[in-house]
Image 1: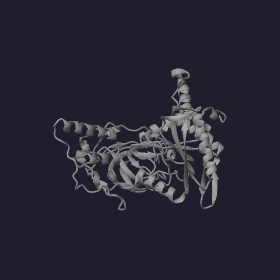
Image 2 (image 1 turned 60 degrees about the horizontal axis):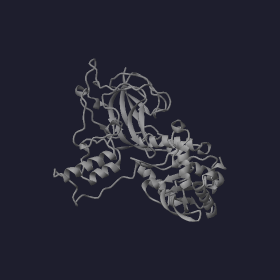
Image 3 (image 1 turned 60 degrees about the vertical axis):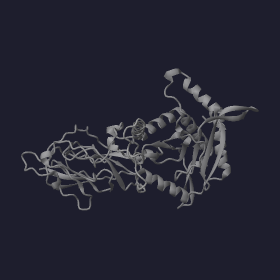
Length: 462
């Protein structure tokens, strides 16, 4: 006896209560295996693939791409064999429908618990020949849930349905959509080079350049929005909403102050070049400037532990943290994220650099988990990559401090009593004035600058 089971949006952890549907990975009529990812959702922390704990035939989907659903809302229904729902799986059963496959895992996130191999996607009629054909849409959705996506009739389930001219576009980033609108570019005419045809910012920029070249050559210009175009409103949700809330809370609750200093980074750059040339190609991955600065920060926090702390406002206590979990700012297509290098106090520069590289790649691919974006105790922000010299960072609440690093550029500098051209960087420290006074913050920043100017200073703490 077959059952049609309803799979609901599970609790994704970290206190998250809602998620936005970014991309459906299955269609109505597809056969799915146990723990096969069925939908890609974006939370305030990360973008994750949600696996279905049941195997069978998809009979209905709930929510269009771009829709925001609360935890517990129905995602899809699956026709499976006669099984009992796994406790805590977020799945409820009801009679009716038909399909193939059986069993349940109870999984809610990719990589958690058991994992069955993903089945090869194929499309079959939701109603077998032995049963009176019934359109998949006959499954009654939960009244409280959103309206289901209307599937094709059972007799046409084997056809691949392509989006029409008003259908969804393979683009996730609101920045990419905004850029296209500003230049009057139809995203349906752009070929995406990202995963599964995802349209990236570079694709849009390339299309804009091509349109400009066509216009210069006298070909038909691309239509641009006129002055009557209404103002654009962008919802503060997902990653952008989470960042806005955290920064606003930081400004509301933390009495912050900023100090800064210019430092001669010539010796640091020479030391990095020597590290990377030692041993030739067999020496392993190159050590980045960010990795060296991160290691310097860890050494400075050991000397000034006040800045590796947080404030418990309810208990009116400063909590000095035993370990350093170092966050670093990373710019991605989805916006600014802060991955965390766990236990940075136990790592050397090479280990920190390797972990930064791994987390940065995951951030660019949108594969960071909520756990990799939380729990930091101190943040390093390298805004020099944007070509700027200085900034006043906003503390990443509930941390107590953030070090900002500007670009390293040749500048006139007095070196050993003579004017010379040296590699100079500006360092800025924003700190919570509740955890320490200016003397402590200045001591921390001066130690960091000393290590930048004379890397041998760091050797005393290694």
